[in-house]
Length: 311
Length: 267
Image (cartoon, rainbow over all chains, first blue to last red; front, side, top):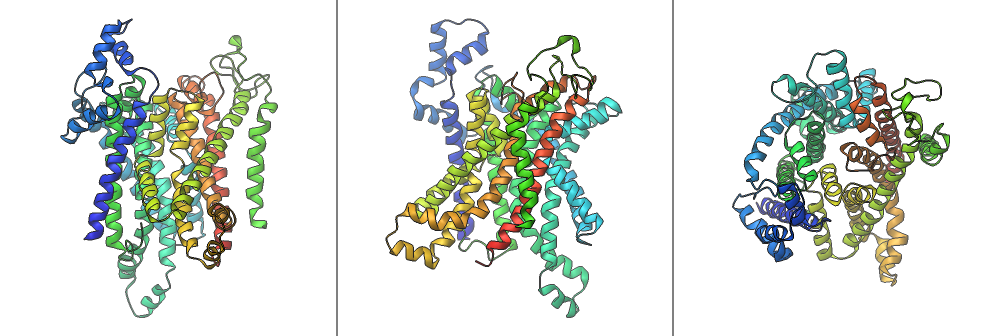
C-alpha cells in the first residue's frame, strides 16, 4: 500500500515538474509573445498600444511566477485557457482533435499487438529457424524505418499506384486504414523484438523441465509459468512503446493531413499559439505519466520482488 | 575481438561516408539546373534531379555529413551530460540522488520526438535549435544507466578502498567508474545515435530542423513528397539512406551489446 502511495506521489510530482518545464520553455521562447499574438490576431502592422493591451490582458507583464500561477490555477480546475490567436477556449477544439487521434492510436496499437504476438510466438517455436530469422529481420527493418517514410511508401503503393485507398484527409473508415497501418507496422516491429526475446528467456527458465517432469501440462506451463515471466520485460517497455505510438501519431497525422492532436500541435507551434502548445504537451505528458504509473503498478502485481529497493 | 569486426567495418564505413561523402559528389549540391528538373537517373545525374534540377546523388552525399555528423554530435553531447548527471546522482549521496532522478523522471514524461519537435519549433527552426532540442531530450537514458551501475559500484571493495585512501571524487569517477561504465554506455550510445538520425530527419521533414537549401535527408524527403506522383524514386533515396544507416547502427549495436555484456558479466 505504501509503495502504491509512493508511486502516486511521484507521478504527481512528475506532472507538476512537466508543467513547470513546459511553461519555462515557452516563457523563454524568442520573440515578444504579445507582438506575435497581435500579428496573429490582426494580421497586419499593429500599434504599440494594442501590443501593450494584449500584454496586460494575457498576463505577460506580471513576471514569470505570476504568469505561471495565471496558467496553472484555472488548469487545476480543468480550464485549459484560451487560444492566443483566436481567443476562443482551447478545450472544445482539442476535444475534436482528440476524437480523431484516439481511434488512430488505438487501431495502431491493435494492429501492432495483433501482428507481433503471433509472430513472436511462431518465432520462438524453433529459435534460429527460418521463421525466427525472418521475424527478426522484418522487426529490425521495421525498427529502422521512420514512420514518415513508411507512410509515404504506403501512400505511394496503395493511393498513387493501386488507387485503392485515399491518401489524405478524414471522413470515412477508409481514410483510417493507411495511417493505422503505418502506426501498427512500426509498433509491431518494436514489439516483436521485445516479445521474442522475453519469450525466449522465459522458455529457457531452469524450472520448466522440472515442471514438465512433475507432470504439469504444457498448456498450464505456458499460461501460468512462461507468460508471467515474459510479461515483465514487455511491461518494462510498455512506456517506451506508448512513446513510440504518440510520436508516430503526431508524424502520421501530419503526413495524412488528419486534423488530430498531432496536426493541432504542429499548427499551434507554427502559429506560435503557446497556450495551445502548452495544453497539448501537458495532455501528452499526462497520458504518458498515467500509463507509466499503471505499468509500474502492474509490474508490482506480476513480480512481487520489485519495489523494495528500486528508487 | 573477432566478433567485433563487423562493428568496426560499419563504424568505418559510416565515418567515411560522413567525412568523405561530400568529396565524392559528382555535382555541387545546390547547383540549380532548371532545364533538367526532375530528370530520370542517368548521365550527368546518376540518381536524377529534384524539382529545382539539383543532383540528388550529390545532395544525398552532402546530406550524409549533415545527418551523420549532427547525429554524432547530438548523441555525444547526450553521452557527456547524461553521464555527468548520472555520476552526480550515484556519488552525491541520497538527497542529490533523489533530486536528480526526479528531474530525470520529469524529462522522461515527454516522448522524445514530440518534445524535440516542440523545443525546436518554439525556439525557431534551425540547426542550433535542432542540436539543443535533441540533446535536451537525449541525456536521460545515459543518466539512468550510469546511476544504476554507479550505485552498485559504490558498495564494491575497490571503490570503498579508493575513497578511504582519500582519492578525490573526480579521480574515483575517472579511474573506477568510467572504465566500468564504458561498455554499457557504448551500447546506449549506439542506440541513441540511431535515434538521433531518425530525430534529425523527422525534424527536417516537419520543417523544424536543418533549413533548406542545405541538403539534409529529412528536408530532401519533404521536397520529394510533393513530386511523389511524377518521380516516386526521388522519395525513395533519402528515406532509404536513413533506413540503411539506422539499420546498420542498430545491428552493430546488437553485436556490441552481446560482446560487451558477455565480457563484463562475471566481473
